[in-house]
Image 1 (cartoon, rainbow, N blue to C red):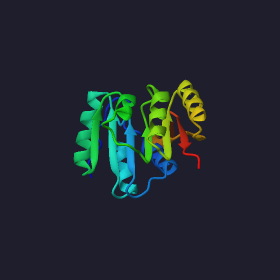
Image 2: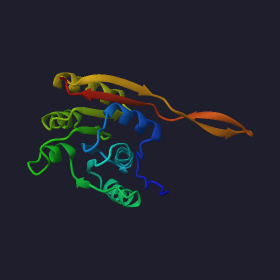
Image 3: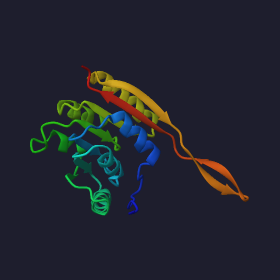
Image 4: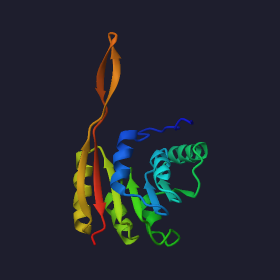
Amino acid sequence: MSEIVSVSGGPTKPEIIAVSLSKLGLREGDRFADVGCGTGSVSIEAAKIARNLTIYAIDARNEALRATETNFKNFNIENATILAGEASDILNSENFTDFIDCAFVGGTKNIGSILEALVKKKARSIVVNAVRIETVVRTIEAMKKLGIFDEVVHISVSRSAPIAGETMFKPENPVYIIVGKKQK
């Protein structure tokens, strides 16, 4: 199996991806936006869950776009479009698809305008990962204003590590998973 080509700040840890995607509720044939795609690892796992997924991987960083492209090739991810630029500009572009079913937001620059654009695209579920408290607060406030706030989940993961011939646990940075759902 191929290894993920990484970039600064990524890839998202497998445990965080698992919880994030379970909250997203992907379905077969969905249009999925991976905003701030980084390495593309979330899209790769999403493609394993939902068949016939159409993926839009968006990032403003050239290193991230190169890593995503390499990882998509290495993991045989098809039906994916990699888009370079500021996510809010891309999502609001007339050339971009008219709807998105689900979105994972790993990059949180301009979170308010990104969430507004995803709501306009009729996203039924949006999951935002954040590590900074201020970002969590801004995201919750924006989701409440848009009428989509559902919940926040705080995840702490520790990994085993050797110490003096025995085993200890080393904590990873905690992550907040903020969930938005289209209200019926």
